[in-house]
Length: 102
Image (cartoon, rainbow, N blue to C red; front, side, top):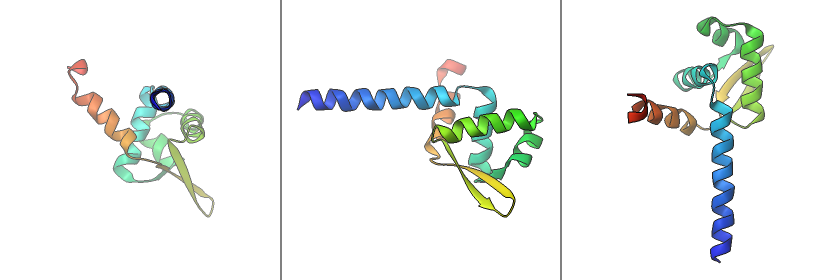
């Protein structure tokens, strides 16, 4: 019984580390904040707001989508990105409030 709990804890710790690594980039954090504020955005809106190359933003969006942080909604020719779980944005906000950054 205790062994099962340890295995489950290890899996959760590994998944948490995986998610934190996936968002550990300044542009990805900005994208997450934008999506949290706007619910969903297309690539054009994101790269224009961040003043970054579309290819670079697309790379980060695809990476976070592959890792389960973002998902998409298609509408005609447009693809809209949104957060799968806004708790990721809450974690970033928690880090902002921590003494580590102050």
